[in-house]
Length: 239
Image (cartoon, rainbow, N blue to C red; front, side):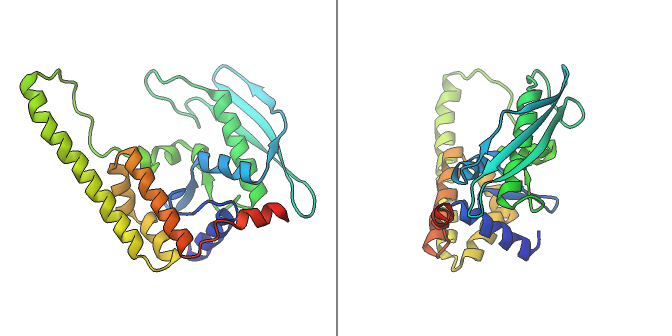
């Protein structure tokens, strides 16, 4: 993404109280946003959806039409979009993972409608738009390969406790270090660049979910302290 596109995305997200950092990542240069972030934006924008229209219904495929409405200063706006999910083509599942083609088609359609209504369509994509987007989510990247199952004996348990303590201590140290870097950032752009950097994304991926959420919240609070317009959404809602 260019700096101009980043700025445009950040300004639109700020209107709904969402920062760029922690909500958006890049996949081969393409900006991708979390589905849960779009759900929060839809709630802030007071978007309502009509009942979905089933366009195609097969055992392994669903195509759904979704229409959304958003109030605004010039009156209510409406947008529609199609959501598609076809197993093995644009919706891949692995092993015994159950397939929910209708739910996926609906999510894709709703996310596209939200992006259109708030002015983000063409600037970024929802994580559910493509399998490679979801697979690349920073919080889903494993810190290490899965270890084989092992039934511990008493000696194992005795040795495991210091190792677990060391791992937890390391995670806390990493969290503290990253928070310190965030505190040293002197501008909104500096915080955003730090959170979107590959190094930071890798460090966040290696953290426990709770620590990762704390760091993201810390970054958001730092953005607010630097003047990030977290309350702009209220003005937009009142317009």
